[in-house]
Length: 383
Image (tube, rainbow, N blue to C red; front, side):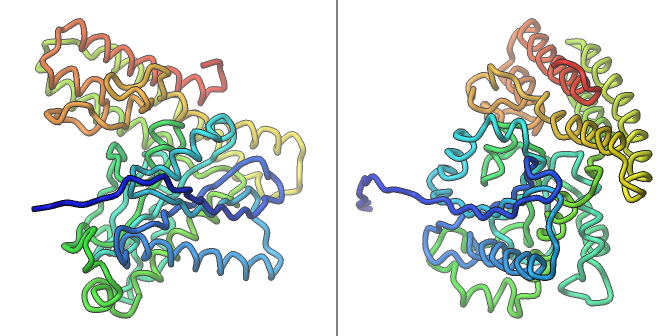
């Protein structure tokens, strides 16, 4: 076999459309998809690109009717994803300080449609709002059902985003932005080949483009909900429950050789704070549509900022050992292929490499401090 290639320097172009928010223009809900493809790219990425363009068309019609989002919405078309997420990564690095202070959430769709069945990954505080959006969209295979109903019966599992295979990575793993990644179809056989064409799409994945319509609906509604709800629909109780499940898995893997008590205490504190925040959010939601009150608006803004910034608490400036660019200590790529966990990458790597008990304890304490920082952010304290 002879391989022939050329090394060239090329300029890439990200395209970002901005819909300025009416009340909180300095808070950003970001929708993104990459535009480059290896070959024809009907699935990867053009199914996602077509959905993003349709959302842009829909938003323009809403704007013409007088609607304006409460918060600013960014529609982002990334370049050079296939070369290592270069477009989105460079954009995140360039704007990391502004994103850290102002980004509400990042909603990613890469391959919108590659087959049947809805699949999604998310940070846990976004699980509830994702399910709420699914309830509002007609299922593409059965008009008598919603996407939520078929998702619940067929899959009913929201993944966690430790993988590094699309543009959400920079936002979550480096900048600590709550994120969602969505797609129809678990896998497809023509990935990154010349057979990923329009012909393959209409013959196999989505003959009538009903799944494309459903994905555009889910994605666009998520953007509107996160941009328009006076109180951000974040559920940190769900996050606390997920952290507890992760802690249990680590404990089982360690078989009592190393104590996970520091994690247990930190997660218990996080859970208590999450419940307090949920109660506070409920009260402020009840007041959200009553007569405008400056004091209530200020409390709402302060609570939203706490919920928005809590995810940043899971970042560590030193990053994951061996992959220091990745800063998120709860969800991120493990450096070791032998790692048996898809969360707590530092702990997973230490266990996989048969590191000393001291090294494992060190990683447990790093995650513990990250959870403590997130708790402080939720409470409104210094982190």
